[in-house]
Amino acid sequence: MVKDLLISDFTNHHFQKAFKLYFDELGINVKDWEALFNEMNDEKDSRAYVRFTDTYDVVGFVQFKPIVLSNWFFSVQLGFIREFWVAKEYRSTGNGKSLLHLAEAYFKENGLQKSILTTDTAEKFYEKNGYVKDSTIIAKNKDDVFVKELR
Image 1: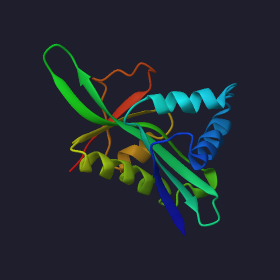
Image 2: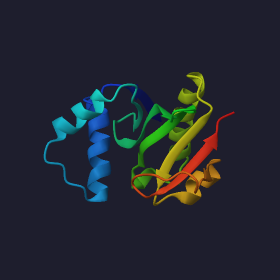
Image 3: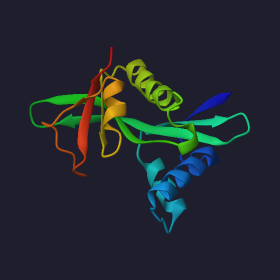
């Protein structure tokens, strides 16, 4: 049995535990975790779903927010999947798909019609979940950009 928790306060201990496991897997060392989580809190409109078992083992999380891309003439609102991770022992069990769908449902409930993300590791996963690679959009991190029309 899994539980999902929607959070907007990134000092939440469930989110922090999940995020630290994620960075540990990536081999990223953080000198000041408190500052990092406070910086996340400073970003308005950011949310995350954290998934854990009934014994509070971390399954994964998806961090997301609405964004606006604009120039002097056009403006478009999108749902941005910022960070997304599932613990190795819970991969290929439907948890990733379910977490992704929670974020997409949040976007739709808030009037957003497209979701956007970058990846350098999970192209096939996103394609299986309706995302299309869009080479016309260049991400600052140089990762491939994927977009999905939310219906």
